[in-house]
Amino acid sequence: MDNILEVDHLSVRFGPVEVLKDLSFHVAKGSSLAVIGPNGAGKTVLFQALIGSAPSEGRIRWAPDVRIGYVPQMLDLERDVPITGVDFLRARVSLTRGSGSDVAHILDLVGISKEVSKCMIGTLSGGQFQRLLVGFALLGDPSVLMLDEPTAGIDEPGQKQLNELVRHLQEERGLTVLFISHELSVVYQYAMDVLCLGRKRACFGAPKKILTPELLLEIYGTPVDYHVHDD
Amino acid sequence: MTIENLLLSITMALAAGLVGCFVIMRRMALAADALSHVALPGIGIALALHISPIFGAAATLFFGGLLVWAVEGKARIGTEAIIGVLFSVALAMGSMMTSGEDLIEALLGGAGVMTWPEISFGLVASIAIIAFVVTQRNKLIIMLVSPDVARTAGIGVRRLNLLFLETFALTIALGLRYLGVLLMGALIIIPAATAKRLANNLTTMLVVAVTIAVAATVIGTWLAGWLHHETGPLIVTFAAAFFALSFLRR
Image (cartoon, rainbow over all chains, first blue to last red; front, side, top):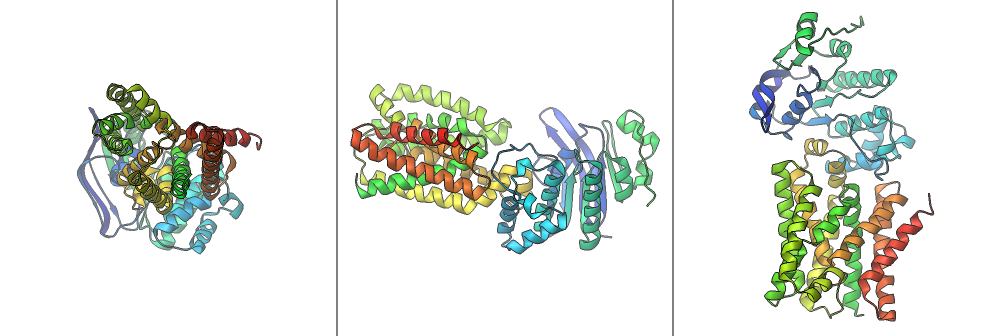
């Protein structure tokens, strides 16, 4: 399988602090990569380096004509900013000269009602806003979807819905998915490869190889339990 | 008041109302006041060279915007902090270069008759500002929600940030001869702040901000002529009255 992303010897430094050091991994087209690791390990910084918003050294090579849809972590938005979900999605459509029916289709796809889409984005619940961000990313017809802790702060049914939505989209559209998660059971269930960022070292491989009690203890510094779904 | 002056004041108010919406949503309200002081050294230089102060002010505001943008990119500190530093330095330099009377006129607006170059510059700049906000509003919305999301949507975030800062600076320069740079900050902020309270979507916010800015400008100008009073303070007082009235709604 062709690689859609190849990363060689990637390092990211903010002043004297080296957040990522000599990181190498690859992502196959149509696959899903989970990025795990303790807080402060540099998972979000890695995503920012991959989209070019954090300065980095080393080599990041995306496949030609790749289109990235990025869903960031929970954003700190004022509740009273008068931008509605529809305003936000229409803004994206205007960049690609799409139509209003694209917005209606995406709202339907990500499960946001017409009423909710007319609410100001600062008043949406965590789950509604994350689904809106996924919808925004999909409007760009991405070949890669990057999700930074998409289910953080969302209730259990909401998490399940969002995970199922991403899996469904991946199957239907052949998307490559890169996601950051602290939910190891979700990682085990959805990821084809796992990149584990530890404080001392990073490791990369299939979930069965990475998600072992010994390796998780080394990476997190404490025993980590997770539940493996049988489906 | 001549037709060209009326036209200029209305286009200027339109520009201020539109830019103000994004200034308010980007939490840069105080930056409008601070940035306005950056005009002072330019006014001093322009007066020394016997050219219209508006051109000197526009020049230093342009470099002020460029400096804020450059330092922001390198130092990773907030725009407000950089503008705060720049404002203090500009105020110190401006007060050394400008006499007391000129300073008051630049800050609070003056009566004098506007020259054709000033009117032409004002009209062209106002139309350019309006065109920028109208054509770039969707990109500005996306950047407001998340610069990272904007970047992956193909938006040149750094470039758009620079253009926005320069548009903001130019809007302040516009008010120099009419309201004074200090009061222009108020015309940018107050209508937009009022609109933010009243609106529940972007289009409504833009329409309300522009309506209040134009209404305050026209009523203030008309009343100033009638009362033989300075225009700027009356315009800002009317804008503030609209803001106060907005509290009746909720």
